[in-house]
Length: 148
Image (tube, rainbow, N blue to C red):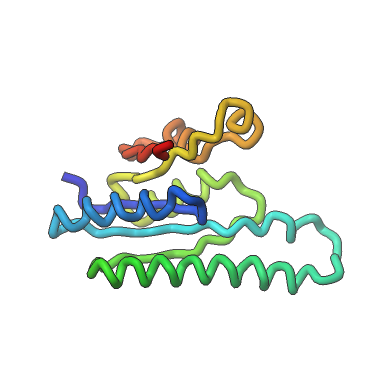
Protein backbone atom coordinates (compact mmCIF):
# COMPACT_ATOMS: atom_id res chain seq x y z
CA UNK A 1 0.00 0.00 0.00
CA UNK A 2 1.19 3.52 -0.74
CA UNK A 3 1.67 5.76 2.28
CA UNK A 4 3.24 8.98 0.94
CA UNK A 5 1.19 10.23 -1.97
CA UNK A 6 2.46 13.20 -3.98
CA UNK A 7 0.02 15.07 -6.20
CA UNK A 8 1.26 17.84 -8.49
CA UNK A 9 -1.65 19.82 -9.92
CA UNK A 10 -2.05 22.86 -12.06
CA UNK A 11 -5.03 25.12 -12.48
CA UNK A 12 -6.53 23.13 -15.36
CA UNK A 13 -9.93 21.53 -15.67
CA UNK A 14 -8.53 18.10 -14.74
CA UNK A 15 -7.00 19.29 -11.44
CA UNK A 16 -10.20 18.81 -9.41
CA UNK A 17 -10.55 15.29 -10.79
CA UNK A 18 -6.94 14.41 -9.86
CA UNK A 19 -7.31 15.87 -6.38
CA UNK A 20 -10.56 13.97 -5.79
CA UNK A 21 -8.93 10.67 -6.81
CA UNK A 22 -6.05 11.39 -4.41
CA UNK A 23 -8.52 12.16 -1.63
CA UNK A 24 -10.31 8.84 -2.27
CA UNK A 25 -7.02 6.96 -2.06
CA UNK A 26 -5.92 8.72 1.15
CA UNK A 27 -9.29 8.10 2.79
CA UNK A 28 -9.00 4.38 1.97
CA UNK A 29 -5.65 4.14 3.77
CA UNK A 30 -5.61 5.59 7.28
CA UNK A 31 -1.81 5.70 7.39
CA UNK A 32 -1.44 7.56 4.08
CA UNK A 33 -0.03 11.06 3.96
CA UNK A 34 -0.77 13.48 1.13
CA UNK A 35 1.29 16.28 -0.33
CA UNK A 36 -0.18 18.53 -3.00
CA UNK A 37 2.18 20.68 -5.05
CA UNK A 38 1.44 23.56 -7.38
CA UNK A 39 4.22 25.12 -9.44
CA UNK A 40 3.93 28.76 -10.42
CA UNK A 41 5.96 29.58 -13.51
CA UNK A 42 7.92 32.80 -13.03
CA UNK A 43 10.35 32.14 -15.86
CA UNK A 44 9.39 35.37 -17.60
CA UNK A 45 10.92 37.23 -14.63
CA UNK A 46 14.41 35.89 -15.44
CA UNK A 47 15.11 37.51 -18.78
CA UNK A 48 17.86 39.60 -17.21
CA UNK A 49 16.35 42.99 -17.98
CA UNK A 50 14.46 45.42 -15.85
CA UNK A 51 10.96 45.48 -17.23
CA UNK A 52 8.51 48.20 -16.35
CA UNK A 53 5.86 46.54 -14.23
CA UNK A 54 7.85 43.29 -13.72
CA UNK A 55 7.31 43.37 -9.97
CA UNK A 56 3.59 43.94 -10.43
CA UNK A 57 3.41 41.12 -12.96
CA UNK A 58 5.19 38.74 -10.57
CA UNK A 59 2.86 39.78 -7.74
CA UNK A 60 -0.15 39.20 -9.97
CA UNK A 61 1.02 35.74 -11.04
CA UNK A 62 1.77 34.77 -7.43
CA UNK A 63 -1.61 36.11 -6.32
CA UNK A 64 -3.45 33.84 -8.77
CA UNK A 65 -1.34 30.87 -7.65
CA UNK A 66 -2.01 31.61 -3.98
CA UNK A 67 -5.77 31.80 -4.66
CA UNK A 68 -5.55 28.38 -6.29
CA UNK A 69 -3.67 26.99 -3.28
CA UNK A 70 -6.36 28.41 -0.98
CA UNK A 71 -8.99 26.63 -3.11
CA UNK A 72 -7.05 23.37 -2.68
CA UNK A 73 -6.90 23.91 1.09
CA UNK A 74 -10.64 24.51 1.22
CA UNK A 75 -11.37 21.40 -0.85
CA UNK A 76 -9.24 19.26 1.46
CA UNK A 77 -10.81 20.81 4.57
CA UNK A 78 -14.31 20.10 3.22
CA UNK A 79 -13.29 16.47 2.62
CA UNK A 80 -11.77 16.27 6.12
CA UNK A 81 -8.36 15.33 4.71
CA UNK A 82 -5.07 16.53 6.16
CA UNK A 83 -2.36 17.35 3.63
CA UNK A 84 0.79 19.29 3.16
CA UNK A 85 0.33 21.85 0.40
CA UNK A 86 3.25 23.58 -1.24
CA UNK A 87 3.55 26.39 -3.77
CA UNK A 88 6.79 25.96 -5.70
CA UNK A 89 8.26 28.77 -7.78
CA UNK A 90 9.85 27.96 -11.15
CA UNK A 91 12.39 30.33 -12.66
CA UNK A 92 13.25 28.34 -15.75
CA UNK A 93 13.91 24.75 -14.66
CA UNK A 94 11.87 21.92 -16.07
CA UNK A 95 8.62 21.45 -14.17
CA UNK A 96 9.18 17.74 -13.82
CA UNK A 97 12.63 18.21 -12.27
CA UNK A 98 11.23 20.62 -9.65
CA UNK A 99 8.42 18.19 -8.80
CA UNK A 100 10.69 15.14 -8.76
CA UNK A 101 13.15 16.82 -6.41
CA UNK A 102 10.38 17.91 -4.04
CA UNK A 103 8.75 14.47 -4.12
CA UNK A 104 12.04 12.68 -3.42
CA UNK A 105 12.91 15.07 -0.58
CA UNK A 106 9.48 14.44 0.95
CA UNK A 107 9.85 10.67 0.56
CA UNK A 108 6.93 10.10 -1.82
CA UNK A 109 6.15 6.52 -2.76
CA UNK A 110 3.42 7.34 -5.30
CA UNK A 111 2.81 10.12 -7.79
CA UNK A 112 -0.74 10.86 -8.89
CA UNK A 113 -0.67 12.88 -12.09
CA UNK A 114 -3.16 13.79 -14.77
CA UNK A 115 -3.16 13.51 -18.51
CA UNK A 116 -4.56 16.54 -20.29
CA UNK A 117 -5.08 14.83 -23.68
CA UNK A 118 -3.90 17.92 -25.55
CA UNK A 119 -3.45 16.13 -28.84
CA UNK A 120 -0.28 15.03 -30.57
CA UNK A 121 0.69 18.41 -32.07
CA UNK A 122 0.26 20.36 -28.83
CA UNK A 123 2.06 17.60 -26.95
CA UNK A 124 4.95 17.83 -29.43
CA UNK A 125 5.22 21.59 -28.84
CA UNK A 126 4.60 21.78 -25.08
CA UNK A 127 5.72 18.35 -23.91
CA UNK A 128 4.08 16.63 -21.02
CA UNK A 129 4.98 16.90 -17.36
CA UNK A 130 3.47 13.48 -16.59
CA UNK A 131 5.54 11.91 -19.34
CA UNK A 132 8.70 13.65 -18.14
CA UNK A 133 8.07 12.48 -14.58
CA UNK A 134 7.54 8.91 -15.77
CA UNK A 135 10.83 8.93 -17.69
CA UNK A 136 12.92 10.35 -14.84
CA UNK A 137 11.33 8.88 -11.71
CA UNK A 138 11.65 5.57 -9.93
CA UNK A 139 8.51 6.43 -7.93
CA UNK A 140 5.38 4.61 -9.16
CA UNK A 141 2.85 6.77 -10.99
CA UNK A 142 -0.92 6.62 -11.05
CA UNK A 143 -2.06 8.39 -14.22
CA UNK A 144 -5.56 9.88 -14.13
CA UNK A 145 -6.87 10.46 -17.67
CA UNK A 146 -9.00 13.41 -18.66
CA UNK A 147 -12.37 12.08 -19.72
CA UNK A 148 -13.76 13.56 -22.90
